[in-house]
Image 1 (cartoon, rainbow, N blue to C red):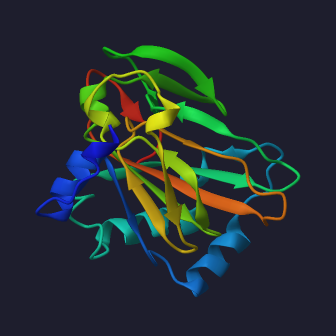
Image 2 (image 1 turned 90 degrees about the vertical axis):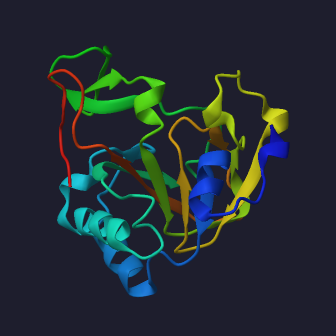
Length: 218
């Protein structure tokens, strides 16, 4: 699969081919400081409900309207913001996986996937998910490439194969932009590393099938 990591004629073509790209400086230091001040205390690895807070909803709008992302996120709404935090004391690895569950309420053609943080979730189909875009904003960065992806894996249903994964460096203030169905995972922080805080936004079509609707949409 790694041979699909190619240059394409346009950025959007490269995104559709590889399923991801990296942007530098999607936020500035002042914004980072304000966001960190608004982060809620968490007991576990993170929370999926940050879009309910004004500062993070405003960032979603800013990302969608930015010159670097407005074409990629055109006609999509922010429907979730998940906050992850790794520290040397609270550290873990995530195996390669696809994001196939969305937070939605109501009834429709997709099966229930239970609840998370009190919000109902469903297992969406791949066709819909490939219209969605994830934007992982790195408040602290992952310059050593502890985010791993399998390029082009959003275009097939192959089983995870760690030998095909490539490490993707993301600097502080930058972002990894990805298809939810792209196989991705992460390694542990180095023992001497500081915290790694990530804001993972999901942008998706505002209208869902059946009587489904988003819990929140910005």
